[in-house]
Amino acid sequence: MSITNPQVIDIWAIPKSAPDSLLLIMVDPLEWGDEAAHSEHLLLLQEKINTYITFIESEEIYREIPDACGKQLMIRVLGLHELPEQVDWFFKRIGELLNERGIGFDFELKVTEQAPGL
Image 1: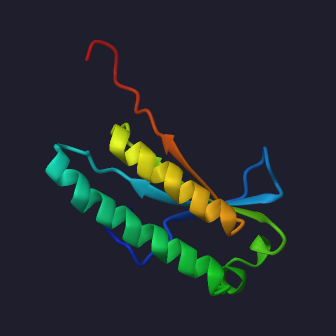
Image 2: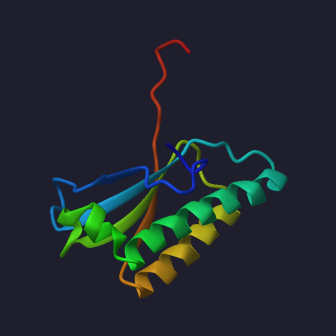
């Protein structure tokens, strides 16, 4: 699952380090490429983020994940590639808007380890 399947919640988790929180994680494996590719990539992310927001605001989250009740909700984008500067700005703006709704938002760069000598 990833941002290429916009109607699905990829992963949810209650972190051991923050048991009062619930993470809704979306996986973004796509490369950013040139600026022309940024728009298409951002549209995929926006559609997936909207799915997550609807999942929360419709309260479907509490039917599907009863453990979410009373938890601080956080949407996390787990990316495999660094964000271009323009996209970093977009994510900061999304974070501000979601914080106003009581929902956390962040981006985590998942660094893949390469075998020695590669």
